[in-house]
Length: 150
Image 1 (cartoon, rainbow, N blue to C red):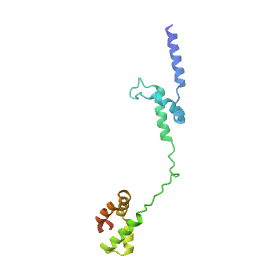
Image 2: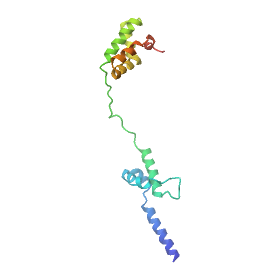
Image 3: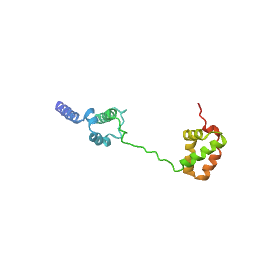
Image 4: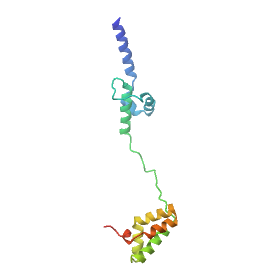
């Protein structure tokens, strides 16, 4: 009698074992991973005796799906740089400053103004805080801000 009960238990556990999706099945099926996501929350993999086999397969299958996933395609994303309406004003002001204070000719001054990060920060200041703050920042500019470091 006891053997029959044990066999009955063994039969029932093997039937359950057959219905557990494999790691590969979890890796291939997004729907299957989503279905078991809520069932396997709250279990800790470090508590081996309480951690169900199906949840182990689910976690390993999810890892495998992430590792084997193709890299995302960013080619369809186009980033357009917006030109500030104040860019020409700031560039002209910087060019005139470089000509007057730093003794540069017009072409040198234009090149220095275009390449300098200081011009970009002045444009940003003008856009964000207005002309008064921009004029204050422009008054603090030095010739060394527009000279190449190397």
